[in-house]
Image (cartoon, rainbow, N blue to C red):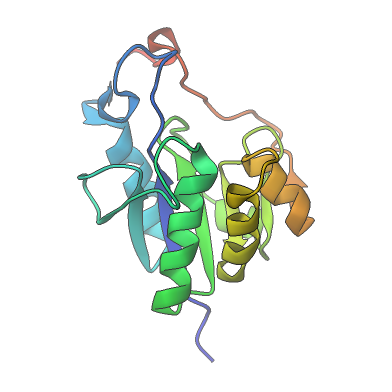
Length: 174
């Protein structure tokens, strides 16, 4: 029996307003943050996409249903793509959390689950697109937490918090 196919999704459509520039292209250990995220997901997933950008180090998808709707729109694009391409689940992360735990898929499995303090990092069944669509087209909160609540996703807490780069000063020095 083969294991279910998992699509990795780097959610990279944010405006990086607190960061003061394009966070995805900021360098960490000589590489753009987006490259670190793609590399991490590539180790665990059958394929990786980037949402919310026109170009990058992996195939790119436009946020769904439109840009500037937050990370849930990026995840919705990945879920939609996953359904169309026969993936069972989407493992998502942002560009701002380098150093993901080596056992992240095991920590989050089975879907749905996300990190309690960073719900952008999650494992979502591809069938969650329908719920994400309802949330995004509705008048309520268009948030990852709203999706997690609607799916009754398990909220995983790590013993050591992950990096969360929101400001240039949050970048570790080389």
